[in-house]
Length: 119
Image 1 (tube, one colour):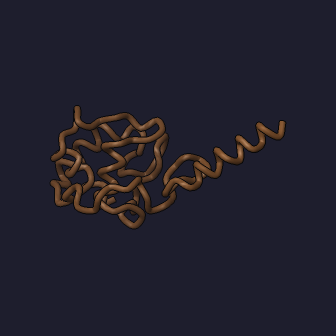
Image 2 (cartoon, helix red, strand yellow):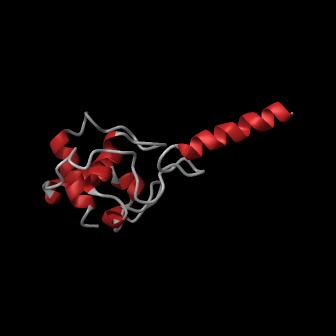
């Protein structure tokens, strides 16, 4: 019993020592792993990003990013930088589907990021 308790405490300590982790396994507010700030330019075509969002993202994130199965993306730019949003798209967690590198290209990701930053 004591061994099991020590194992659980050790695993929890290891989990919380990882940057940006919370108990639910969702990144803490304002983090999305450690993407390099210059990894993705965020000056995309937001009109094209809106089309892509409506095709691939609206089912979970709701109309205009209001949330639903997935979290609300409204004012996400106040929590995540453009490169962090791109990182979430490219390296999804939990139930979010992997859409990169196909069907979304690097330019498509940039466009979706540009649109999401307008919500």
